[in-house]
Image 1 (cartoon, rainbow, N blue to C red):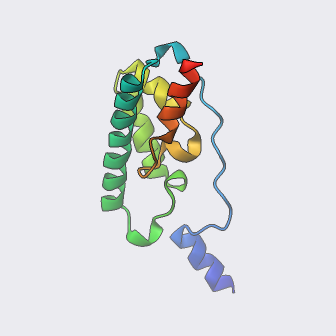
Image 2: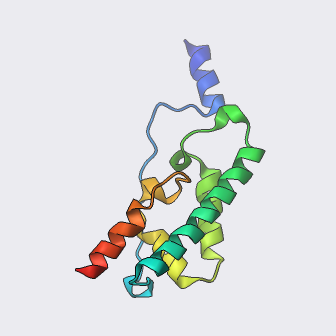
Image 3: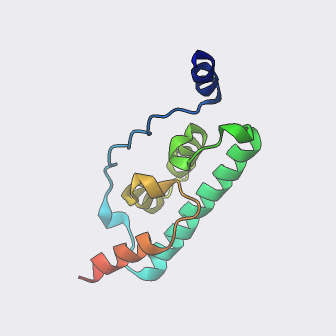
Length: 121
């Protein structure tokens, strides 16, 4: 049993769930209030997530891969790319996304569409 626990620790297979990140503050005034603008930001952020995920997949062993919210390579890479982009609207959009979908390369368009619905009210 001890050997299995040590092997799991070495491989990074933890039974504990990842802790959710605290919500990030953002300025909602920086976000576009139309569907086209939010869609463009969503595509831009998703492109960063997919590029970072591909880079992390190429450099990490296949047996270490877990969900994106449990992979520091993806979280750090995406956050760094967004922070250094200089695009304040992209930074606000990234912060507005819930943590569980912020790093998901397979997320749907539901999240930016919900922002559009909120602005129309």
